[in-house]
Length: 329
Image (cartoon, rainbow, N blue to C red; front, side, top):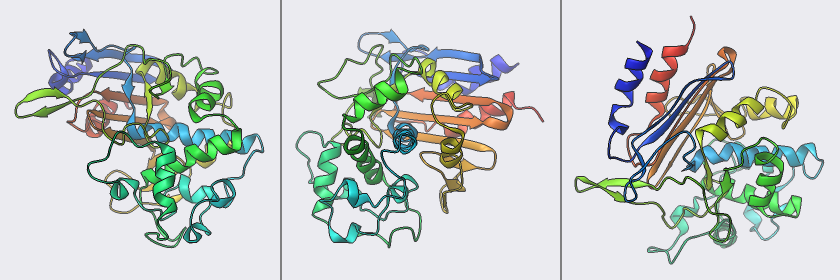
């Protein structure tokens, strides 16, 4: 019966259409590990468990983990003033700390709204900093309220580089991906390694699927530039149950109620790179041509991950429906 229910829920991804990869983990074991549809329509390549998708904002949990690792190393404190690491920011940023960026309470302006239209090429994390250097304004005083911020996580990637003395992609690879055996996971840069088994993003335009794989913001790494697969994310999920990567104290910080969230569906609090709602820890990711969701129910040792290379539908509710099939009363 569960197989029938999953087939029904995933039917829209089947066939010669942009597809998805689905993973259900229970007690560390994959109960469902399947691909649907196509990773590449033009080359007729099917999606599978090894297909790598642009994670979009699911990337934020890795950016936050990088900061926590540097805090464990004693290289920085999460309560450091942001301008210790990025002194070129204007005076209005004097009160912002690293913690404010992690939990979306910094008040920094959205870089997407500051970019020229049309933007020439792709903006990078360093380009986000350049835009914000010219803006002596915030949405609100730091720490006073919550507002989801891609700008904040782009700045965190730069903090990782300044504090570690290495590039953000290299830090992630050496400190997170390689130790966990996530060999096909990369923060994608044009000059970096090619993404193996890569899914390309699509949008339905005028009744047909058209490739929409990159936009002017797709090269920003800290807020959404990581590519990964359900197989590699299973390794990441396993590491969140013990101290092989992050200490007990660091994981407690990541999953704690760092800031109260109002007006966002399915979210009560934000941790560090994680949304919190009751017994759920989760994050979604949306960028041009990709829609993803990773939801954990740690008390039940249950995780459901759905990655897709299409502009719709948003998979969070589908993941909740699939998760309900495996939850125990």
